[in-house]
Image 1 (cartoon, rainbow, N blue to C red):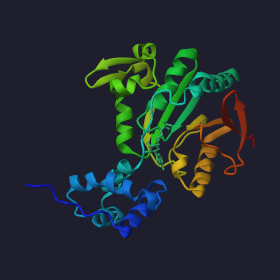
Image 2: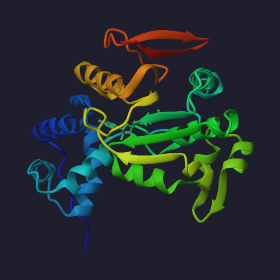
Image 3: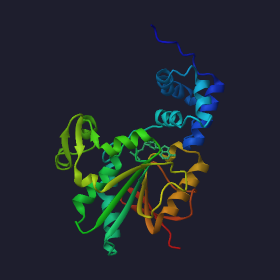
Image 4: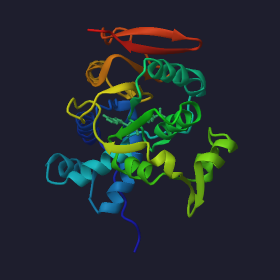
Length: 276
Ligand SMILES: C[S@@+](CC[C@H](N)C(=O)[O-])C[C@H]1O[C@@H](n2cnc3c(N)ncnc32)[C@H](O)[C@@H]1O
């Protein structure tokens, strides 16, 4: 039996799916991304037996098939990440920020890796904390992402040798990972520091808790200006006064939030939530 030929996505179908994706994730795709929608959703259509892009949209929009919505979100969002991405963030920025917080006498620290994808950012922070900070500081790292598949992967903590070698030194790999079927598994001492949850960072009711430090990197670039304003408002509401926010190196809060002061540290920038 041959595979069924899927007709190319029409403008109407692309528009409907663009609006659905924007509503579900905040990710703003314009018409120039039609090819991306077609290529990323074609295999989902094949695997589910749904007959067309229009039917995929109506299934998802009906509210009766949440698993289809989840699969669309997983297929469309970009999950590119790697250990110690933008290494200056880990070499100097994280150490300075965390040392500042610890020097205030606080013996507990909560860190949020917002839009953490498959967990490399959260585990990289955990490695820096283990290397630089003493055992008496209780450090909790929470990773969240809208994509269920990425969060399941992060929780398992098993990475291929390609993923391990991309950004991480052999010394760190030896210290923090153990060989296992399928690659290398994060050691227990890191897994005990890190937990993962699914959720939409544009949703103010995402999850409870107040943080000392938030990393929200390489995701706001996919949002409209209006949604970026909502995002930074949500993050401000989750940070202590004086809490710190780190963005991706190409991202900025300029003109989007008045809740933070900008601080330069050598080649990096971070933001400090204003005291009330
Ligand atoms: C390019 S990755 C960035 C990962 C990591 N922060 C880094 O810099 O390496 C972007 C991630 O944002 C997630 N994402 C997109 N929209 C989201 C939303 N509204 N809420 C939470 N996560 C979202 C995607 O699922 C994806 O895993």
